[in-house]
Length: 254
Ligand SMILES: Nc1ncnc2c1ncn2[C@@H]1O[C@H](COP(=O)(O)OP(=O)(O)OP(=O)(O)O)[C@@H](O)[C@H]1O
Ligand SMILES: [Mg+2]
Image (cartoon, rainbow, N blue to C red; front, side, top):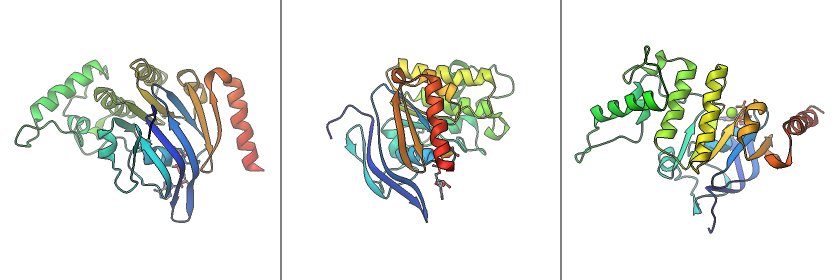
């Protein structure tokens, strides 16, 4: 398909058993665009981004990544990585039982000609990433720390740094700021702005509209598996957007 978009989705449907999580979603992610993906608990936000990331397949509809038609059954997390898509998932962004350096290179090992993992280089790179991207102050955590010993903020930092390190074309962040301190939230928002500055795209899911608003070019809200509104930032104020979302929630209660 002829397109400049990173992702194009048409009439996407997805059910889990009897639960219709997505009902005919039309969605696209433009080049160098930051999208704030909004909606209530259970709206279908994570399901949508997991389809893009290759975690879930879709039942119906069409999806294109950089214009290339995606077969739902063949699209995997590895495939999404190869196509420049990096996702920080809401739950379990990292493998708990593994060391930091293994997490950074999970699924994308540096290998030598014989196919062996270059452990020393991966550890060296991880230390560099921790210093330069995560700005860890070096207390406690090192490249060989186990993920389960890290704080929530540190874990998000690792997942986000990995996205930065691989310089992805599209970074998807699913609730990356839950449980973070104000300072850590600011780091995430700065990271999104850095993605934008580098000419890349981002999808940012959060319940905190005040965080989403200043960094997004466009807002997309979904409700019960359907897209219910879409605005460019220049067309709506934060107050109006808030009102709009409250209205949608009320409509749901009635
Ligand atoms: N793996 C799964 N198996 C069964 N049902 C699922 C699965 N994943 C999601 N669902 C259901 O699909 C619907 C949409 O869920 P989803 O996780 O996409 O919502 P969400 O918008 O991300 O919500 P939240 O803001 O709470 O994270 C919900 O009803 C959920 O229970
Ligand atoms: Mg979710």
